[in-house]
Amino acid sequence: MSKINRLFILLFTCIWIAGCSPSTSEQESSKPNQPLSEEKMSGSSNIQVKFTQEGEHPEAAIIQLINEATSTLDIAIYSINYDPIVEAVVKAAERGVKVRMITDLSHAEEKAKQKKVLELVNNAGIPIKVNTHDGKMHLKMMIADGNKVETGSFNYLKSSIEENDDVAVFIEDESVGEQFQQAFNKMWDDSVRFSEYK
Image 1 (cartoon, one colour):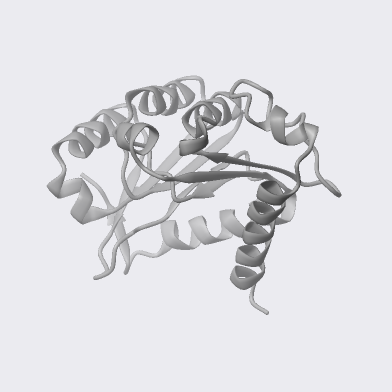
Image 2 (cartoon, rainbow, N blue to C red):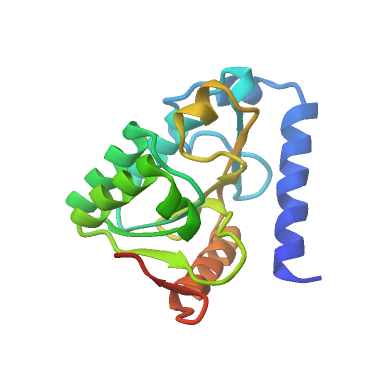
């Protein structure tokens, strides 16, 4: 079984467990400002699931993850224009975190708000790459410090917070973090399918 298949099985298992196991930790996971390291499931993994339509505020947990990053922050996001997340990313770079971003070229070129955000991010010294292949760069994922991952369906948009049915999954796990980091690095280093955004 490939690493990607194992990862998707892990994610869907986590979502099922979070949705079907009423417990005290479930109630605690809805607190947006709770440190990500306080909730522990089996083993050394820490998993949280935040649904927009359940009032669980994934954006607050995403900002917290960015604010807690100390060394690296790698972001592959299809769509981004939510100011508080953008500001947190820029501040992370300002405090010395090595930040990299990959996004979708067509979205960057066609959406004025996204274009403005990418200009701001680029001006902060954060390198950005976009896809040059025919398909979309449709990922929504963030890796902080190599072992903390955020992924799911949640784009970093106001509409994702206020209108959409979306989910963000937060995983703190060395092996899962390594898989996501390898996937990000492979895209970043692929000069055929990705290029620098200017």
